Length: 444
Image 1 (cartoon, helix red, strand yellow):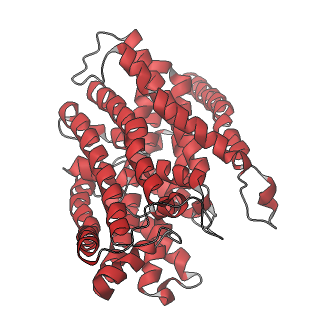
Image 2 (spheres, rainbow, N blue to C red; image 1 turned 180 degrees about the vertical axis):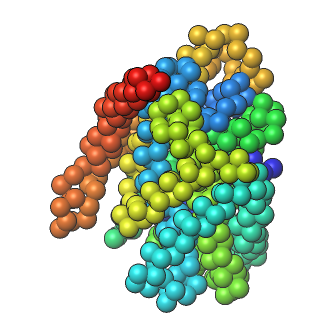
Image 3 (cartoon, rainbow, N blue to C red; image 1 turned 60 degrees about the vertical axis):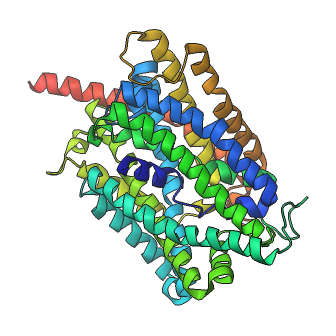
């Protein structure tokens, strides 16, 4: 259960964030998207992770798999893509925390207070993670309960209202409402973002009890749970008669107040605060295990290998925390496509590693198998097509708002440039490692 809860926070964090899917696509299309993506995106990824995590339950997770299957160069690229994607990704969750805190009391997040609250989320994540992965996983269970309790009430009230009051049901819409910021394409990208992150749980394998048994079960369980907690609230809102037009981030609070009064609205606000803090905390646990695995391979300074008495890589936690804190003021909240492109490319490498390990190490003990070799190859098709769609959809997106210098820079070109930067960095890292080795030999 702790692994399921931690994985759930790494991927989902509850229905918060899917409001833009509904606002851009309408009820029918949103529900179809949220039911199709688990089959095309989540389930193949969960099966891939289940096999690799059970066969190679190493700290560093997907970095170790890609390095072992495809070689050191691609292992480095896997880490580079994941860590750069984290810069864009981790800036979003303190923003969710601040957004819902502002709905509780706008004065709390006015002006520079918003940044200070975001900084507090980063500091809290560092302190929380220094207590160890088992503690983070255990705490994720009760955070999961706190997060979803208001939505359980909201879903029940929505279905009850639909059955008793018989409101007009707004199942569909043919086009975005006038002035709506999102359309169908963006709705799909936002839904993809809400379903990504399954591999993040793999990096803490060293701290998971019986990983060969627990990883496959946790992946499948978290997949089903995520889809359920996305679709049920949308269906309840449709039956309750809420129009999809105008639904955007934060609209769950309005729905909560309409169905359950100010108390339920306040509980939904509290759930949003828990969502932001819980997702940041769980993902910090994952990302901070990458540098220590790279340091063990000589690709980062040995200082990253230091652990506290609970086995936590405290240098990695603090360095990553400082890096994410510096990125909080950047407008990354609207750059979901960049996050998708970088993360999606790293995911393709993981599927290639799965196939390569089937060919190169057929005798590797695999307590869980994703299927036959042919089926394993087919698993990568759905995620690859969806990532290609994200690339296509980002072709006209710009980094900045109109009137700013960044408006001339394409999000797609920027993401590709960031990804390609990993190659010269790998060459530089090897050159520094060789020089240090020569100096150590001479001094010895």
